[in-house]
Image (cartoon, rainbow, N blue to C red; front, side, top):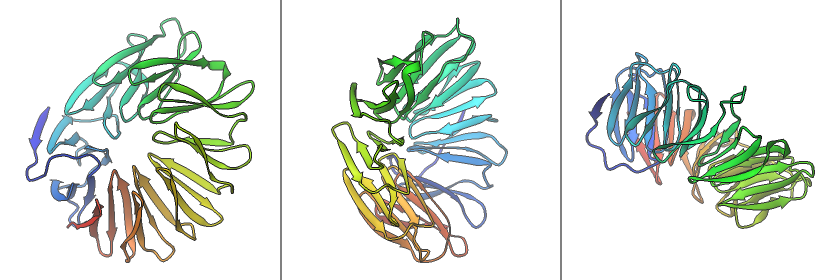
Length: 357
């Protein structure tokens, strides 16, 4: 694997990466306040994580930018997923992971797999094993040799729920296993960061696993629920929007939201034409209308208001980034990239705006 050093950048800090093509279609990388050209031809595809960028170059070779180095990983890639901390990719039937600068083979013949920020759950068809890759190790979870079907499992950012060969659900969390319940009694279950939520039949009560403990949240099944970083947001049987964060259950809105979304630490919802966000215990009303579009990641929410202005909510504060017509924009980590006018490019990061080529 060829490794190329990219000079002139500061030491790596997470969540500070952005990528775009300039007016000559050269690919520019933003890393914590500095720009650098990494390719002179347009990319076939790319995905951005906390501290790495995975991409297919113009010739479809697979490369990774990580910690100021450009890794030529493979001449091709069948599929790949970039999370905050891991890059998982297929070379035909092989499943591999790029982790902290190293590439490791997880399975020669892989079946289904699920990827979180901190783990990879996968079925090894050659060994008939359900495994999880966590903190640099492959940990066997269940032998499915006697089963005719591939195992069932869902992954959160650092949690995993799987059904074993005997039909029981288990939670893998920070290297430990916790028995959940018999799979036939689980009407629905989802995984997030540090939290798993589920509905148990026949009584259909709503429960959560958080930090190694179990909590009953509601006597009745919620109408919907969505997972975040350390919390679950849900619409209860009375149409209230609620949130459980491991310490208490809070009612966020007594009015039923027209829509709500959860990404990482952010809960965004619409109530009576108000555009609101809940972050770290506090609800903020951002606009008295619903934006034509919005995007969010980690602690940042970017949106275009009714006048076409690009605005950002960043860890409790709101500001306008640009008053001109926006051609495109996106959020990655703690950055907002936007293109406006005749191919002008800017990056918002850590309260500042940086102008690129």
